Amino acid sequence: MKKRVLKKMGVFLLAVIMAMTLLNGCGKKEGGTNPETTKAGSEPQNETGSSEGNENTGAEESSEDSGEWTGEISKIIMTYPTGGVEPTDMRLVQDAINEISRKEAGVEIELKPVSIFEIASTCPMWIGGGEQIDLMCIAFTELTPFITQNMIEPMDQYLDLMPDVQKWVDEGYPILNRASTEQVYGIAPFNNQVGRAGGYMIAVEDLEAAGLSYEDGQLVTLDDLDEIFAKIKEAKPDVTPCGVAGNMDRASMTFVFDALGASASSGVVIGLDSTEVVNMYASPEYKNYLDHVRSWYENGYVLKDAATTDISFEELSISGALSGYFSEGQANLCYMLEKKTGRDYIHLMFNEPYNAAVASSGGAYWTIPVTAAEPEAAARFLNLMNKDSRIPNLFLYGIEGTHYVYTDKEKGEIGYPEGVDASTSTYSYGIGIYGNMTEAVTLGQNTLEEDKIWSDTARNRPTKAYGFCYDASAMTNQIIAVEAVINEYVPALTTGSADLEPTYAEFISKLEANGINEIIADKQAQFDAWLKEQ
Image 1 (tube, rainbow, N blue to C red):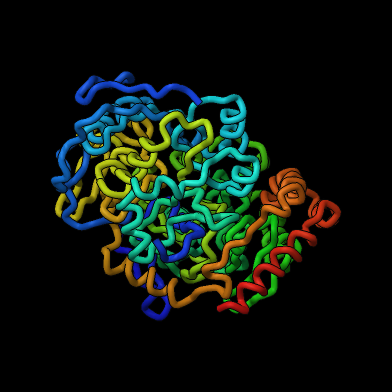
Image 2 (cartoon, rainbow, N blue to C red):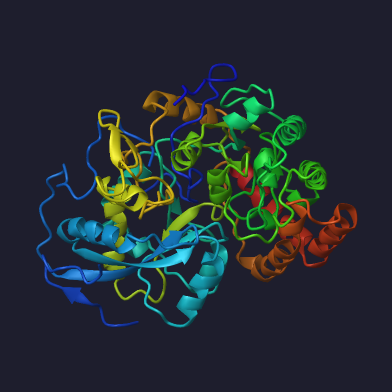
């Protein structure tokens, strides 16, 4: 694997982090049914950052001698976000986790799979139907509706059961989400790397075929992508250079913005120095992306059914039919894709790392639903995810020897076992949302020092809203209406498949008709008041 290159004034660097680096909470630096139980030692009922030298993986004994749990074992039902497909060996991994969690926390988990793209629709349906869910991940969707519609409980009363979570908060990791109130409603995963940056992952072989040479981490513009896509299409006519999909709005990855602790539907500030809340969808930066992607679509650089296709980018990349796609600026994502495709990738970046306001959306938060039968056990397991690196390792990569092997144990680097690849593995690499991943197995590439450079760069580049969290409770109905409009128009607009000018004008008009300016005014007033207190 080629060496990753430090770029841009010696500080721009891609760090090894899990797919959800933006999982910061809205916290401050402060600190139904009868439960099912089994006896300790009973059999199960059902079938990442990095730390060099870390060997705590699989079902080995914990390195911390905290003593084994001696009381009853509480069973919790926990949502398990997937990319859309339940891994074949999910229950096998669940059993391995239970071997640890029974002894360490007195908890046995039962995983309840849900597509990460359907959390916003499926989880409310489960809760509305009274289904027992004790620990639920809310990701890539606004947290506030779950609060205002009384679907999740405040977690303050359970924080005493989470001393390791509190330890990370005391050390400055903003993983508590106080969302719309001063109460804690969610706890985010975290890495040893902070900050965000948008980029475009692209296959090195396609760049080379087009006669192009770029370094990993190199800053580019959308105009640069025009040239890259054109030359790749000329060199490889059967390849689609640009991966965009209707279920993810990639436009906002191309410029610096801050949604002020909420979703973009309630307004954003654009750039590091602005304090003006604006309609992101009506901004020149957003329209610039739409102009480019429309031209890409018309020139055949984008799949014609990009707005509706169910074929994943990963499938297209494995087959070689896709050159790359927009993503957050995480070197780990390139490495994971390389492992699955056998091809080398680099990340072209649109901006350097920066810190945005802690957010109640766009990341992921572990919550306790109102239908929880075992909220205290859920809190104990959540604490264990933040204490014992074996738990996130198992969730992320499965079982050592079965689903992965070490390629460099001293560095904690892993790969597939002999004879196994992405297409045959029975447990695909998971989503990085499981507690403390600073000591999880690494996928290689960057050192802790390199991660620190990335984080320090981000900390030195905060937006003016860093630390602010918008209380959207007074605007819930308007936000729901605005997000319905966004869901109607954005898939076609951001994949280039819409007739741009008339569709875009109609989109902005409907946003305004459904109250986006009213929401923005409310957010601006709160933000202004907060700024006066700083």
